[in-house]
Length: 116
Image (cartoon, rainbow, N blue to C red; front, side, top):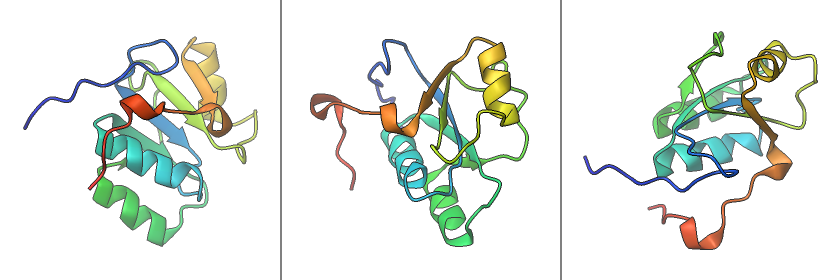
C-alpha cells in the first residue's frame, strides 16, 4: 500500500482524528471522506444510526464507545449537536488537544484528494 502524504489541518500535522456525533448527517460523511483520504479516523455517537454505522465501518472508521484520550487522537471533531459537557470534549480540552466543531472544518480545494 502506498503511503499518503496528508495535508496539515489547522496548522498541525494531524494523523488520528476522533469524531463525536459521528452518525449524524454532517459528521458521518466527513468521517468517511477523511478515512478514505488516509487519516486514521475513529468515532462515537450516543445515538448510532445502523445505516450510517455500516457506511462508517465500510470506509474504515473505527467506532468506539470509550476513548482514553491521551495518545489516541490528534484532533477531536465534534458535531454541533454535542453538548459542552460531553466527557470526551471535556477530556480533550483538559489534555490540551486540538478541538474543532464541524462548522470550522474546511479542506482547501488544492489538497482535496479524489474519491473513487
